[in-house]
Image (cartoon, rainbow, N blue to C red; front, side):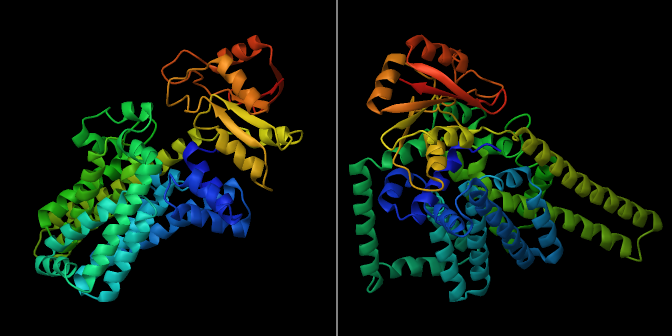
Length: 495
């Protein structure tokens, strides 16, 4: 499977960390929170830097999430619901797809689930150890995804109110305005002000704010496809015709489970409703929307779906075991149980089928590694490689990774235009491009064929048009191509 734009940052970040290139890491990879990069560096240190090793981080976090959700659901509803919750979460197409790609969402789901587990334990037991572990897990969650900094305090405060611990909340907040905690409050506030000032002064915060508030041009258009209040209700199950992060049958069961929680309003039910509501509302307010952003809701959907199934089966079982009920009523109860079991089995198989077709549609290779290996054979340290028309499956960072995979390289890699042509309308100026090639002492230029939909974002321009533009300059010569149509990479030399 081809590397994705978002995951290459973690590969490069891990590579820089294991080689002690901290300054370069901070300047190039600090856009993403550090935790996933640190784990990637650890896996690279053990298994060597490679795409497979980097993606094992996501697999590991996904498997750990299943155990975390099992423990949480067992504490809430017992082992049967817990086991079914883990199964339903594991077969969700979105979870399966994320497990194959080095993205922070798998780490986020795990850390968030662990945080909620310890929060729920603390609310029920009042043990100080659980409170400390909950705070520690949320702190790590902030270093996994920055939005956790907003989610965590809202969820904690809402949960305290739901569990009728408002007196504790008031006393705890007041304690931070008295010595000795007042010193800690002042120190943290001052540090936060200084960090924010430095981020604004240096401009490092600009790309973060831009990504959170607006995102790329295609993301801005994508985020308004549905009305904001119901955007994620649709996005979680049917964002595209062939993409179903949560398969429809399991999604309907999950929604029914949430309705059951709202009707019963037991403490654990209200806890899960708070979890769902806070995450849903916070990410709905953020203008940049995509199903991956609300993956912390997936464990809630799995538990709620499992609970409605086990709850209904329990009612049916009690009904047919009650001696005073007639034989006809007992048969109806057994038939209802069989239908419910069949629905669950069909839902699981349907979810597996959705996951298979989604993965199957993603099974193509973009030969960045082969093209880079070819170019590196004759590339001098003072020469560079240019990526023309970068997009989701090829950019300068991917070429840099393969160029530095086995040993550090002094050769520069850059791209033109700077923005991805599948997210922004391209403006390819050959005069400017030739000048940049001269300035960067470029030896090779990579151009990707761009799959089955070759035209770039909101444009009629396609790779063939770029090839014609390069040939027209008389400065570029096609040296080789790698891969098979329509996923070839053309390698041009520049003279």
